[in-house]
Length: 420
Image (cartoon, rainbow, N blue to C red; front, side, top):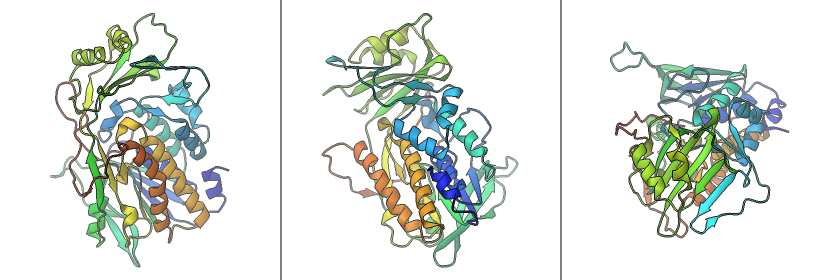
């Protein structure tokens, strides 16, 4: 039985939930909540039009994305049949390892034997399909171009809603006056620039201490049209690094018959700043194949780079005093280096944890402690896998510096807003 079916079977009467942010973490949380609550409101700072589009708050959308088998299974539990929706919208199914050619310094890896299939697509398309499925639920309402500015505290250490303000281009600061939105449960899924520590401090709670450290991985990504007449016995490429050479390259097919190409380096080297530099960087990889195929391909947009991605764990699970009926999920809780591809899988698995605990507990009251601990346990393996083996854990930090991502090939930065 799916999470939604189990929750719906317990009946209604659970009130109104607010979800802050409409990335994968927010949309999957809204999907889990819609099976339990009477109403769900998703609050989003950006416009949330129908169809694939790029939100300013998601700079990482420009880089290569795949949905793992675990993410697909979890999404199908939350939204039955969504894998079919994704493939119908253009997502490409990659059989592993048959469709992926992995080239290392010692040559190609074996490609025999069946494994789990990945879905490869642009982040904008994945978000659009998820958003459409959430929108299709009559319990869910989207409140676009609104910003949450604070939490509304309730009696006995609870949260009873949020205060928001709407974008107003005629106003001096670009926003209208504050107004309250009452809620019986609030989920912050606003991403790596979450203001939850500030909101908690504003209502008398201790902000969490953080474990945070920068990685040295940098990225450069762009999209190509394959060469006319291109034929190969592979659909995707991965060129691995080697001891002393931490550079990698990948090519994945995405919707519209295009290729998404990402080059990365784990030594802090600046990412290529344009197509000429990207080609030179591809030529320096362990095998010439990626350079050969993209040299003959047609660029369909600029090269976007990302410097200084960061691991950050806000230790909400360690706080002894916490307002009930408030939860933080996704990158707002634990931010992982995107090199390891855990982000969307972790978001889906967190939503499953939320849905299952709500269904088992039967009420939103008195559940926040269990939810925080359960989410921390679910996120711990991805955190451990994303850190360097044998590295001494960094000292707790409260740094608030934002990663400068992305950087367009003309050197300009896009605005960095809450991303999910």
